Image 1 (tube, rainbow, N blue to C red):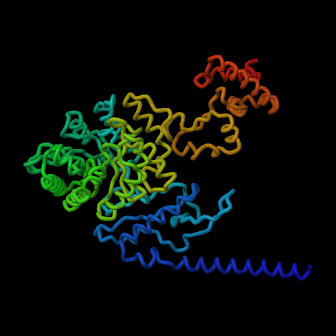
Image 2: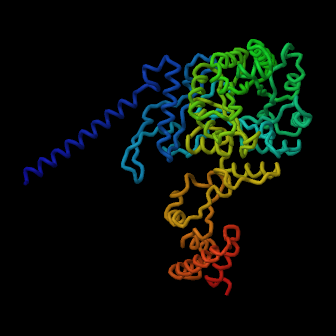
Image 3: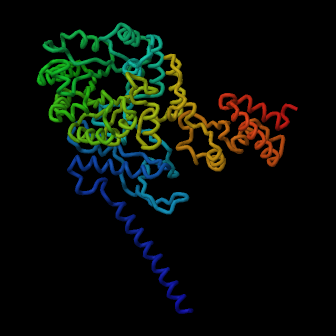
Length: 535
């Protein structure tokens, strides 16, 4: 027995020493590895895939506080990584044991930690424009708001010029990167907005403004097109120009030849670039066009890039594309062109947010959307869902992340200004987004608030709510008693007993037609009486 014990102890010691040696070798190997594997050093495509893989490592943990590498191409567009801004990977990999898990997870740690090795929960060092080269998601994402242009095409949405100026200022304070404020060549209100913006908006807000328009008309030069002239006269530093990206739309809808459409793109973009404008091209019906005739749709992209466009915005105009289609097609465009690729999604299939995030995951560095998802037909992609999802679940760097706690108030400000009723069930910002009704859920949350919440509501400026109904449990009432301070007047045992009595009364009354979800004051009065606060 003694010999067996000694052998067992020796085996354990040998195993422990082996583990230490193995970890030391692993640490040494990782510490001296290049930023990219040797096989990817001269291959832009593989470099992008390496960046995407590095980003994916972070998604394994909701606790990840890492800062993703800056995946911008150099201005020369040769596909090389800007090594001055790419975080070194030396000793950035660690094995971390997470609480209540039996697995070790590999996490890419922030290379910008403070002196104590701590890092924040959000990435704040964001790219703010496209002037330095191609911006590639999901590491970096530019937020492009089109509430004041595409959003106003929604049914029952109408905004005065005064209100557009107020909303533009609020969007600027939230620090979105681009504010598409209207189409100055299409209506007097938008023309008035850009005229007044020159004197009534701050310099910072004006620097974010985008004027929207279209390519020149057929058989006329861009410099002679009145609509192009209105874009120039708007004074906006950035122009977003819609162009047909679907061959059938070209031949049958605008009744131009495929070459005429390419010439319209080239002439319009090059003319505006020659005047010092930053130009994005919204490729309308892009995904449908790609599936119809890939070669022609890509030739539209090529024409825009060759003419000097800084961004190619891929539009799911009819809202019928699925996320897997968006991901595959977006990645091909990102790999082929040096311009920043953007995503513009409509919500006809309820996929606008998913398609936008999928596009970012596959390299799109600019996401267009609207506050609260307003827009034509069933709406546009909702930035109030996209921004928090990218910030908190994907760990993307965005300028507005530092103001994320203000997104709920921004959502409600826009609704109020547009005279719209807020959607209580809206993710992140809705009044019901963190409302809990089921008794089992509320009981679990008394032990841990995160048992039935994917984030802390305060991160987006919202708050947890506990509802009272026939589906409630004792903890729903106990929580209300605590909120009202009744627990200070009676013991826990008495409070628990009276909570059950109140709950039974609520259940009985709801069974005959009463409802207490919208009558919290009635429940409060029951509690105040039960806890002797009114005696």
